[in-house]
Image (tube, rainbow, N blue to C red; front, side, top):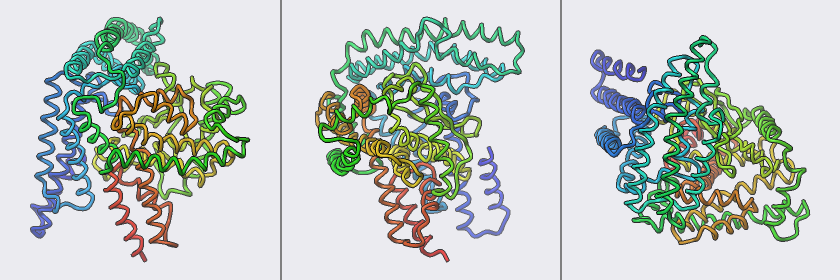
Length: 592
């Protein structure tokens, strides 16, 4: 609303003041762009109310998205209209920041239009990391229930869930007809995730939890009525719908599953994978170039890893020694609670050092939480961003249940990636950049930037006092090797015909990590082609830009201002980031 008022004021000023024609055109064109950005943002919340809830907008919290063919067509048509309207705006008459926003708006919607060409791909909504099978459970973590109207919103959403699930099952059925069904291994993980949401006791489901945190201002009598309604909704609406999904996946859908999920074997799979690679990396790198880059990075990292291990008694058989190091009780937390406490202590240490590397820091706090019980037992840790209005903190979700396979020496680099100075610092900072349009403050779609920053953030650990002992240094190198190996196996699987087993064996040899964990990783890459490529490619680009800035600015280089130059525009395509940093370098060189 405020942005709309600013746009209106700009137009009124144009009419009232004796400005030049060029200035008037600039103001009018900027107002058109701002109005489009705001309208598309508002419309997106109506199209995808679940997404709006995650970003802290609960105005549509009584609804779920329309997953029917008609709903999909309406959104597709809207995206094409947004794109046409954006292309009608004269970019040359916008200011620098608005030009970036327009370019990003066009590129984001162009990506959606490109995906419209592959209807089969769009039916692949069940993934190893989550999807239709877990999205509603994840939504239960963020829906507010502090007031009676908020609880009534949730009850309406639960009433809509059976119809929404029927739409999702229909979409999966279309996928069968089009030849797009995930691999059996992925679907087996999906079934385990569904089963974890269907415990014997209703109170143990993720769907009951919102009713356990009702606000204290709700009178006791109303609280009891709302909880009774919640119990009925979970029992009669949510759980039966989820069971229908399970029956379909375990039956007709799994019967059509592929032995592997290599995109190479799907209809038009080569074109689809090329598109996914371009979207994930925001580069023109080919699968072969990315594959070779991964091999080179591994060749660089392996001697460093072995050198550290030699200080711990390593002689040969790399995977076996790493496995021994990973299972030594002295390197493991004694309990899930101890693991969580360890993550929090590391985060506290890092927080105190951040002003040395950043000129400005976000104000939004972050915390550590155990991963919900319905998640895959082998799932990697992850980060959930804050609400954009500051009403909810960011959270690092740790796999506390897997504490016996999470060595202490891997924890520092993990906190640096998922929390600070990684995802939380970057995402929370972006959310607070009020001068940017909302879609830029919440731009998770640029994997190479978002994940590249987080992987680069791991390398800052040395400057933050982390990795002081040999095992922790190895943990850092192992994490980097994992991301380098991803370049090899993702392209190997989807472009070069590697089997799932070959990918797992390669990852074990490259990293020494737990085989079961790495099997889960391969299934993740299978069900989300190309996503894993962004991490290392983004990190290398940020390091390249830092080296360039240091070389050109020499004594004038300020690492604190460089880091803010990288994160103070929200997530970006890598070529846009490069242009902005080049401009920053030039401005710093000319500064008095």
